[in-house]
Image 1 (cartoon, rainbow, N blue to C red):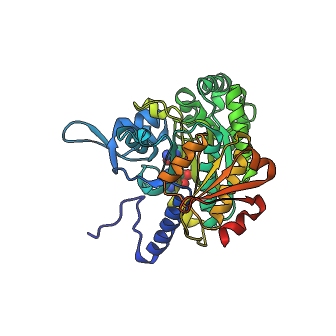
Image 2 (tube, rainbow, N blue to C red):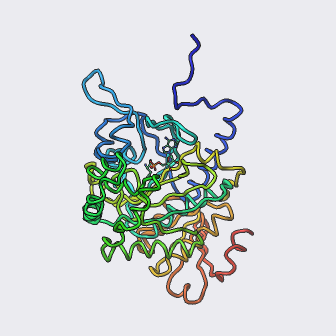
Length: 414
Ligand code: HAM
């Protein structure tokens, strides 16, 4: 008998492995330019890690996990996603104590027992990033900017960013209840799957591909009716920042994610040349997850992208990191969009750039820049912003000079 790969799994042969290596190189490179460090966690974990975080009633936990009883009695699971393992590691190794802002990324195989089809395997690979510690919209914008940068550097065509907010606090449970109230009288018109979801996870009904059900969705309540004032403020600030970074997006109040841990901002990058499995990337905030898994309350946000799907829809490669780290210090809250923009302009030139999203003092940020071994610091205070100038401090020589904002590119290219 000749053995074959198991259904839904694939070999990566020598003729393809060069493309994989190149993709991995670009991911390492962009992650480094945004100041993210790699974390690697085990392939299997305690089953409860996933049921408590992703959620008992999600498709992933209820029917897609590869789970077995260990000889010593516990239940183990091949990781179906990587956010929960990264949160576990963050808590286990007290990473929050090492630095109030942890920026992490990862790459590796995952396992979900789904029905295989184009763009959907049972063993697949993800690249993902997670930022712990900042509750502010500039962190949301930075995370989305990393995805945007990677996809544009990879030459991914026809990618659309879809954006939503699932609100915080009780918002989601009120919305669940409102959806149940709306769909219950229409139950007979729902498919068997949606009828089941109505009991367990009504938000997933919004994900239906059934055209008949789509008609019913038109009258369903929208999550935006349940946002608090702070949710609303946070979300519109995220949108303003994305606009100032020239990252186009579409609002989609019907977009729900297949995992239960999200709060506030959620997003997906959708590619129009992938067919039915069109999400190259999905992510969002999960401000309650660290606490749920036994850590100190810590806001966090991240995303993961399917590497097979990226390879299916790309056709060119980008550039690599040069020079040493540049640290952008912005001291004016209302200029956070501009600071993100300036950081991106310098990254465009090939430099690694980091930016504080904790709104710390000048002294604290300078200390951080020194600790990280930055070569140069760009400082934006009230006066600089009013005069459209920037202070550039060379940390090796200690010399500081003022330049016109319009000379930024010139300064970093000579
Ligand atoms: P997810 O939406 O379940 O999110 O997966 C993210 C991406 O992984 C999808 O957009 C898709 O590209 C890829 N993917 C998922 N399942 C498969 C499959 N069976 N075959 C091929 N590709 C697949 C998460 O996993 C979250 N942990 C993302 C996250 C990170 N949220 C916050 N931080």
